[in-house]
Image (cartoon, rainbow, N blue to C red; front, top):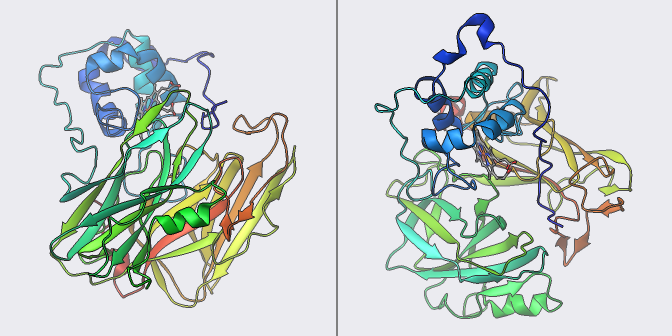
Length: 451
Ligand code: HEC
């Protein structure tokens, strides 16, 4: 059973076309009407290097799948954007207008005409598989075998490097090798002292191994003198569909020491029926500009600073609601947010309530989509003043009506704590809200975070 599979819309039902009432459908062509919509909203993923399974770059590509394209856009299955665009806005937001959707319908209904494509510019899809462009340094993960056993696999991976002088890293992006099975990657940075050889120790340990603690030691994640190396938490994150984030100069980043390692803690592979070898890589982007503003992470819910109320235990055949909230005592400028749940997640909403009672909307996801867990970056930093409460409301659907329910029939699903942290198995649950922020300074509201 493929646990990661989304419930897909069925190609049934009647597609309504109104174009003939207002204008001739024959006027609608790929080159004039459809290409701009596709290139803006689809090609960033549907290109030969992108995360999607096929390319939607040329007329031929789109024509071949015109029926599917018409269907998935009308159902709003594509482009994947689980956040409610009525509630809050983010950079890289991809949401089709009603008009775009109707144009695609009418184009399809009227025979998917090409029009004159001679002057049509195909966009430069990211040659480096990255929206951030050419990296300054590339570090490879060790090749990892994915077994054809249809099980999730969780590993801790050490990715060492050595450089001749310290650099300031602006952004790190994880580029998945086997795109279809790499589910997520959460990486911390370790900066070792000069005496330590980062290449010492093993590269890979299994989180689910009974000897995990021992295997963790074998990765040699301490300095040679057993002191703790400098550590940057969540220096690089990847979830399906997510893109690298680079903030404006002066905001965020960290110092890359001469000896160091990224630790993929954890890398998660979804089930596979084929034996595969994954060779994922990390792209590093440097800057000469000093770091003026540090970024920090605040995590609510599972493994975080605020409890989940009531505790995250969802009995079979029940839909349950849970809240997690925290009051902040310093004003912050929120840059990026990441809501996280697993398979029985149903809806998610996060907002702040100021001391004067006003609400600051953060994000609303009416229909949770496990496969699309973006790091949502605001267009401009959002100020949350001191004394505000940050509140997360989430619901979970553990009924058989939820097509993603991993158990048939439904069984008790809970947040399971083990080894001092929560189980990240997709068949257990999590409720997490991760906020990347700066300490507030006057004028932060006016900084543009657009790439
Ligand atoms: C953020 C990346 C991304 C964007 C943007 C995106 N797609 Fe996709 N698309 C995917 C991935 C990944 C899959 C395969 C997984 C799935 O079906 O959910 C997919 C699947 C599809 C499928 C096949 C669905 C099926 O059931 O087999 C179609 C058709 C499609 N996309 C069309 C589009 C169109 C049209 C757009 C733009 C309007 C678009 N996509 C935008 C990533 C993307």
